[in-house]
Length: 252
Image (tube, rainbow, N blue to C red; front, side, top):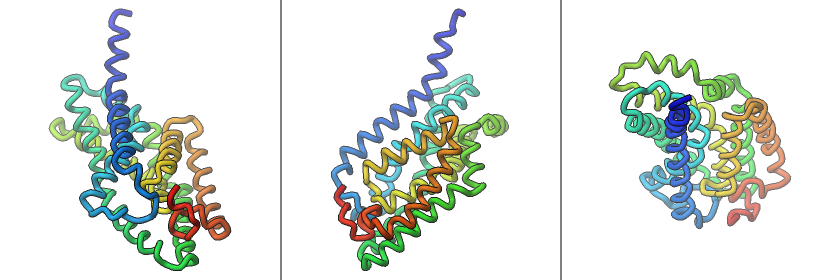
């Protein structure tokens, strides 16, 4: 039993590191952008500022659910664990930072859609909900979610990577699966407002439950069905899509 608690602490450190980074990202997002109106669009941010905001936001939302994977990967590292886990995390976040480029284009497009007549904005909101919901029900979503939920196979593959680039490649590879799993949920922020803090909290909870809870796959499918239902409901309840439909909830 000697050394048991030390081993547990060492295994917990990578998860704790990611949770600390996520908490810091939440703090920065709330204090810097939390007071902005939750409307579709880029919030008048240029591309560099939007990418900074997007990267912090995705760190806040994604890292809590990624912490167990990071802890599992850390168990494959015998020396220089902390700097190598930093490299893994940075590569993971760089994938999401790159996803900020199409996210900026989508946000800019929806910002223009918000200026259209209410009927057109409602149709755009319905399309966003439908695309998100349909992807949630696809085999690709299932595969990416399975890799995030049961990453043992990934860990075996990462062991074959060259040592010099292993941590960066592993972080980027897992980030790509995470992006494939969660982009459909992040798209919902386009309808609710990129900096809608309530939507961020709800989606962070959904992402974490999908990846970590025993019923995660069923939750993913339920969210898909609910999103498709919203695609129809928004025609009767325009306020479901902030700012796009003239529903009057943009300041929420």
